[in-house]
Image (tube, rainbow, N blue to C red; front, side):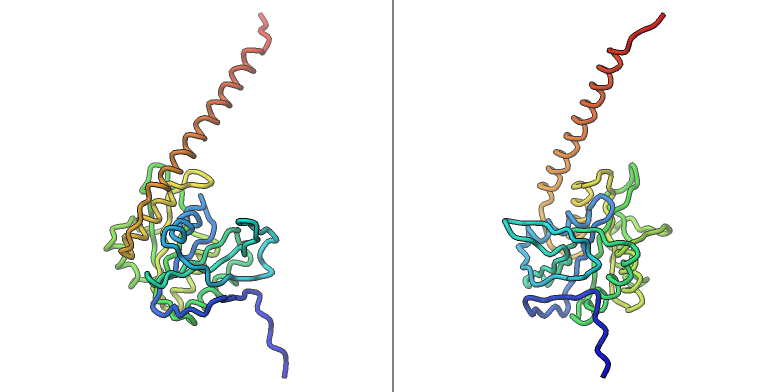
Length: 244
């Protein structure tokens, strides 16, 4: 018998938890890291338990160290109380490999009996709404309309999140994508928008004030940095010899 082809994406569950009927939050890095920051906030505030990770040779050899020990770059968390799971990623997946990661994630969703998926991402709409959304199919649109989120009617999206939503549609899994309106590389305000939208969809109440406080700190730091650059620029101009 020929040896079974080895998978390039492997779900390693350190604890065998039934996730039938659960909601899964996908937090892969994207514009403004809104989804990743928001997902990590959910994990911390809901005191979710780490129950596994995803391993793959496709991942970059970059590992975060936390409290003296290395962490897997893509981890799985669960809250039995809220029937909620989170897949949190801390590195960007190469677009050429996105289809593999998305397909395997959908297969895992089906295997675990997960009821619906809330994908997270970022978008840049200057002066626009805090959060935008789109659904995997027409049936899933109902929840977006009920929550009164601004729906993206026409546009383009890419990466793991884009293909994940497409494959969820093909497999008739209820799914929504929440996109925080990001203006910074690490946008806590956009992350807070995603968390508030998540609360509206699930009925789980969370205080986003700490995220907004981080957003204010970041904005103040950016303003300070810009003022410093402006001062340096003026100083250099002042030292420029004048000719008549």
